[in-house]
Length: 401
Image (cartoon, rainbow, N blue to C red; front, side, top):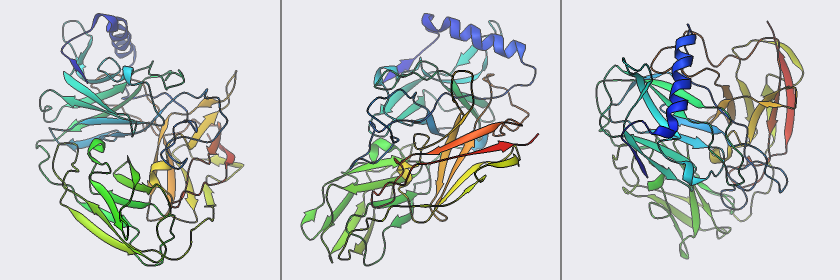
């Protein structure tokens, strides 16, 4: 954990760069990001997780696959903690206030960015970094959070562009306990190789979701496994197949909390296994935009619909990514990935804007570039709830004017 109390000398050049950008730009924007996807070295149990497919050499830079609060959100609680989730394991020595910063505007005298004091902590298991302000944030104030260029993954690949996003603070702190929104599985004849999942009503403190607070018991007692958290969802992956035709009980304890420390009311649910494992690989039912489509609206998102429930913790920018042609090779498109469990749909949303502290932007930063060909790659790191990987799929489309 690191504590920020002022302007470190080593960051003066970065401060100057931010200030110059603010002076030059007439229409400002809140964020920009680095990154492509991850690789198979960052798996989350049983070979599945926040890593993508590929060979043994990792030459792909890490990226930010999600953040809280979300970009351009408002009415955020005054006691908010700000998080960013990386697509793969990153070097923890970069997890400090030099590389994760919160800005509330510019110093009126120096015209340099004014940084909010706070601390940074890192959940290495889930690749989530958290900035905790030293004091409640100001009601009505617009803040810019930034993941700074230079962060490296464990292979030394570096984020090459700042990733920033903005939000506006509301008037009240968060004192409401989180709740469990849904659980999987909940029925009988569950495949014996199934994972167990719970989704929550709000963002959780990932470090409190462990095998101590999320447990599974069966005919042999406690089931060994591991817990992964991503985007309001925790997944328990058993270390081995469950016993056929047996009843299991999953439990979430009040040791699990939201980001501001409100405890989750304890929750239990049960299910019964069937006699066999599910070894059928998931398939892609449809993609939008379709392969070779032209004249696509610049406001479009990329959607992938699967034929069965996927493990949400594997639906990240490591496994669903987008590029454009470049002079020396494909150029990664900066964006985030989300997954809708109700429709089995993964969505890639572009985030494209420059960093100008504290100011609003006036254009939709999720828009694609006009008259541009985009290539989308779905990697086999994306798996279903039984750990079966999807086949690699690559397709392209071209935007209109």
